[in-house]
Length: 594
View: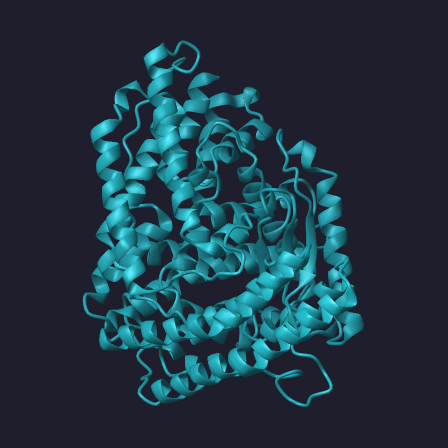
């Protein structure tokens, strides 16, 4: 299972490597990069994410046949690695890569039987919203060829959705059917994509039409060619894209009539075993569902007590629930739900991030080369998308890192959470981590561009606390916002295990959030529904943060005055995303070297 690593560390092995050590490490790293490149070559969308324009007019093959092909490739590559590479001759960093690659391959093979235990269309994400989002945000159009490939991708959406419907049918045969609440939300998102010109007689352009025309107008092309491309795009949207969405909508309406209100993955065949695997993969630990549940309960209690201290600071009279209600309803904590209010939110988020950029030298030795920008979530997906999220930059510098803020309704984006959100999604959070990983040298690509949720989101949550330790969050209400976000992640441990292990209902989960957090009813509902469609994912944040804090405390205690927070952060980040057990070993090595 992920997280179970036995890594032997040899002091000075990098300095005194023998020629055969270098040769074997080079051979292993060549293999890792070759396998990575070969996999990328099979997935056009992955190429686009990485700034590669091969197969630029194509979509991924998401068929079950492709999944089976990937399984066989993984088995063959694992066999080659085990039979060919001498682990004992590898240098320290390559031993880490070797063990990570082997563990991930073994996880993929072991969990292949669960490959359909997910919901490719749900209220949060899926191909129905992912396809237009990909074209708008990822498909850059710098010349005639790029624009033509945009049209080719529009033409290919019908096949993408037919494949998606086949996958949904296959899952239903296995008993993997989303709960009833998912269907109306997903259908609404589909309709949003095909609303507006040229899909109807609306005065407003649809998101895809607006995006294509905007990109086309920026190109230095003759007017006849622009007209031709625009005509081809319009025809593809009307004749191919719209019918594809209509087929998907019809299928979802029909399938939704058979859905139930059973929420947890316990309803699947071998659902308990699947959930245990999911927890191990998500947290990269051996923690059980019961242990995670209890950690959550303990953290909720601790954070509630810290919130009570803030209540005393602001001289609030009443109990914690009264304070929650005050924070939920007082107008001083919210921007107006107008274009002006939303622009003010983005402006303030930029200010917070720009201020932190000026302070990064006090926390980090190495900083990312890529820039970070702040954007609103696009209108076609803002109603269903998450509150905030980060999109890494393109490795070639053609696209910056993006912090997306969802401003569909500013009532869901209180001012007191603005700082913590910006720190988590931007700097010193995901941008410092994921953009920096892309420029690391000496590690294979699968580590630069891979991900372990506990590491990635644990770092993001840890970076909400860092500014507090720097003297920021000077407004006590902003500090409450930080705590409220940490509380949210603690509650996730309780509710995720509650739904999928203890068989809580959706209503029980909502009630727990409402009774223990200051968040709105809407946010509580959305979070529980996220747990339901993404079993285990939300447990990563708090488990990862607690591990990073534990390792920092260990290093501080061992090193005393020699402890340098910048060096500690450099160790945490310089290996790219890793399982928590590997991070543990990396910090032990750092301590031993000092």
